[in-house]
Amino acid sequence: MVAAAHPLAVEAGVAVLERGGSALDAAIAAQMVLGLVEPQSSGIGGGAFLLHWSQPEASLTSYDGRETAPAAARADRFLDAEAQPLGFFEAAVGGRSVGVPGLLRMLEAAHRRHGRRPWRELFEPAIAAAEEGFALSARLHAQLEAEPFLAADPRARELYFTQQGRAKAPGTRIVNREYAATLRRVALEGAEAFYRGEIAAAIVHAVRSHPRPGDLAEPDLAAYRPLERAPLCGPYRRWRVCSMGPPSAGGVGVLQILGLLERVPFDHAPAHSAVAVHLFSEAGRLAYADRARHLADPDAIAVPLGRLLDPAYLDARARTIGERSMREAPPGLFEPAGTTHLSVVDAQGNVAAMTSTIESIFGSRIMVRGFLLNNQLTDFDFAPGGPNEVAPGKRPRSSMAPTIVFDADGRVRLSLGSPGGPNIINYVARALVAVLDWGLDLPAAFAAPNFGSRNGPTLLEAATDYERLRAPLEARGHVVETVPLASGLHGIERVPGGWRGAADPRREGVARGH
Image (cartoon, rainbow, N blue to C red; front, top):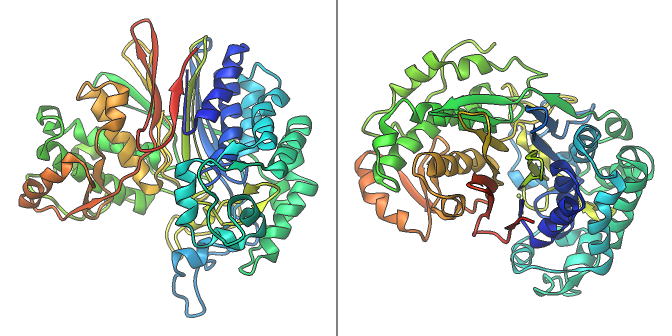
């Protein structure tokens, strides 16, 4: 089974599984196609976190392919001449925001351990689609139409826009021969072809020659190394929930929200009720407050994971959740010791859950050799002084939360994740409670309205029946905003006799088995 954000990516992954490929093989093939057909969200110019379950070994591994800051990076990177933080787009558009991409090195390292098909074979579907062309989707067309910066890049303008600067019409065949050539080099020579030589030089030149230049250098690319980290796991009722640890705050945030909900009467709140939204939002406020104060690259600061997930700490934090909203939660007081998701399960029961990103939509808006470069460095705090400040070689904090849930017998119950920037934590936790507490199947859980709080207003998904909850929530002291909450959940769940996949109806993804 493969669940991913575009039908062509799913087809590529399923074709690999049909040839006896592993879940990791299929994930690589699907991701290479996503970089072509969903360029606004992820690609080889960005990074990823991967959670991999090996059924024969009964072992769970997580891989950190997060981008790193250049060696020349300094804490005042995103301050203006008056030492004030730059506006987001002033920081994000251009070379200053580009970190060292980590996706390919990470996938290559995981493939050495978990792959069954040859590396070069996994690139064939994406190369073929890039050379033959793919139909521009209505969703990508709409995002191009709303995008004010990308057309300034000559390569991107030629690919996606008309001579008049308008987005090409839906259904237009997009041929990206530069991307095909890049993938062919990587397929034949390995990830080294990306991190050294012509491709690396082209990346550096594009970053440094941009009107808003950055300081990325070829030695930064050559020095990049993916990391294998211990997965972050915790209990929720009768299940074991595992996700990515720091530098992602996603796994910590999801586990904190679940741990807090287990300590308040969430299980007695009717599904889709104001009481359920109230309790979930209050738990989110507490988790996001801790995210801002304590989470960052664990190789740069001491992240107090044990304290953040300690049962006594969660007990104390849960006692602050009352009948009325706290509106803004403080962080716990103790001494600190654009994106896409795909899920794959193969015939052996191995599972790959990977969330990958180039950060905001279309990343830095710099296109090189057929792919877009990330703007991942804007995930650092713009104002220096906190745990997530910019530093040389450091990995910025993330909210990505690829997640695998195990039942009491240690079997995989479900695998899921979502894009959505800082909202990812709420999207994933909301989907988990919809399945584990409310008993919804995965398609229904993904289709249900989104809600939650990032330690600000209580957010309800606009144009859904959850808008009826505004009045009862305001009566509890919530400041309510109805906003578009376009999650992109993709996942797989165990059902009697096999697996069921699901894709978020808000986007164009699908799930397919064989």
